Length: 205
Image (cartoon, rainbow, N blue to C red):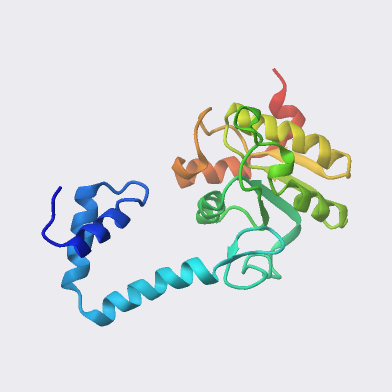
């Protein structure tokens, strides 16, 4: 679309780079920002700047945090012997929304995918194994997506964690095969967490 303002066109171009935002939606967003007073737009811009520059990863679980250790890891009421292993930060948010899990988390940052050139060394598996070596972890709940890559990662983690004396369980497969956790409704996801079972049982045919 040809616009009368290069500045407006540049803003639309940048907004349209966000996932799920087409150019029409980007145009509506840009025009809405133009209607707001300068102070409101400055607050918006500052929030985005701080998000990019100041948000960090928790040194324990690799979740996003404002501090070196996130609020979940620093919560003394959490069960420190129980760790839920997830692929992505969005999965932490999804599970937390169920209010069914009272342990800690570990965010891998992806799954093993040989086709994409992603191996164990490309994920935050080393930090997870360090936590297991600390002796405090008694159970790891594998809450990865029900895909071939997710199952490959579960198989690898089960072996490495069992070597360290950590019990391994998986969330119940009330989640459809091939589905992502972020798209699962909270009731199904909550029940899957509550009804988890040992890894070995989950892979038996």
